[in-house]
Image 1 (cartoon, rainbow, N blue to C red):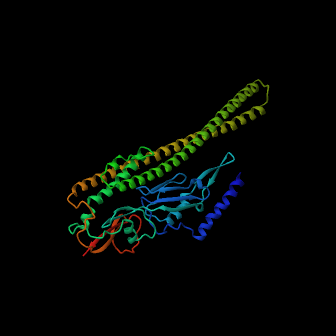
Image 2: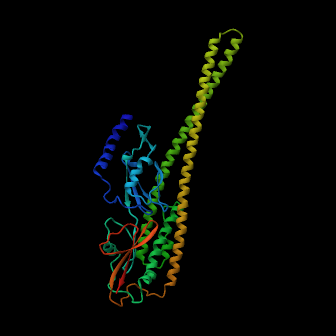
Image 3: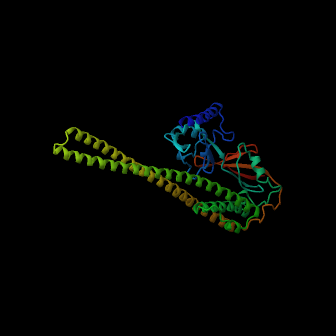
Length: 405
C-alpha cells in the first residue's frame, strides 16, 4: 500500500517541482497584487486534486481551508502567501483511502499552489452611460472600463448638474441600491442556509428591469458558490466525525477487553496466593502471576488513556465544526446589518434627490474635457489619483468620470 502511495505521489511532486523551476505562476495573478476582501483565491493540492477549491476572502481578510484551517490573507501578495505555506502546512495531513485502508499523507509546500481566481470588482461612476459595478481583468485600463460602462454620453446633461450632483442622481443611487439589495438577498440566504434567494425586495425596486435581472443572476451565482463551499466543509467534517467515532468505539472495545483480562489475571493471583499459603505451590508461579498482572494493569491504563484521547479529539472536532458554522452565521449577520444601513442611506438619498433631472440622457450643452479620477484604497485610506485613458486600474478601484471647461 505504501508503495502505491509513493508511486502516485512521485509524479505529483515532479509536477510541483516543474512549476517551481519554470516559474509557472498563474498567468492572471500578479505577484505584486495585494489581496483584499472580495477577492476569490483558488488553492490547488497537486497530491490530491479532490481538495481543490475556491476561497472567497471575507471582510476580516480571512479564508478557511479544511486541512490548513483559518488564516489571514489580507494585505499580502500571492508570493508572500506561498512563502508562508511551510508554516501553514506544518503537521497538516489528510487521509488517503487505498483498497479500503486509510493512510495518513503529509502535505508538502510544493504540493500546494495558490492563485487569484477572481479579483474584486471595480466601480465606475460619473458621466458614463451605465455606472456601477464591473468585473476586473488584469491589464484593464480607464478606457476599457468606460467602454464597459457604455461610454461617455455624447452631450453633457445639464450645466447645473455638477459631477458631485451627478453622483447623487436618483438613477446612479438606484443602481447602487440594486447592488446592495442583491447582496442583502445573498447574505440572508447564507444566514438561513437556503439554496435560493428571496428576490421580492429587488423586484419591488423602481429600477431598470435589465439592471435588476443582472443583479439577481449574480446573486444566485454567489449563493450557489457559497452553498458548494459549505457543503464541502460539512462533508469534510462529517467524514472526520465518523472516523473519530470509530476510533472512540475501537478504543472503548480495547479498554473493555483489557479490563476483562485484568480481572482474569487478578483472580489468578488470588488463587495462587491461597495455594501458596497452603504450601501447595512454590513462590515462583505466584511471582510470575503477579508480574503478568502488573503488565496487564499497565496496558489497561494505556487503553483507558487511548479512549480518553479519542473522545477528547472527537469533542474538539465537533466543537470546531459548530464554531465554523457559528462564525459563518455571525459574519453573514454582521454584513447584513451593514448592508441594511447602506440600503436605508441610499433610499433616503433617492428621496432627497427628486429635484434633479429625471434622466441622465438630457442633453443641453456640448461636452467639455473629460477628466478621470481613480479612488484607490491603500493602507486603510482612500487616495484620489488623476488618471488618463491608458492608466491601468487595480481591483477595488472606483473610477469617476467628470468634465472640465
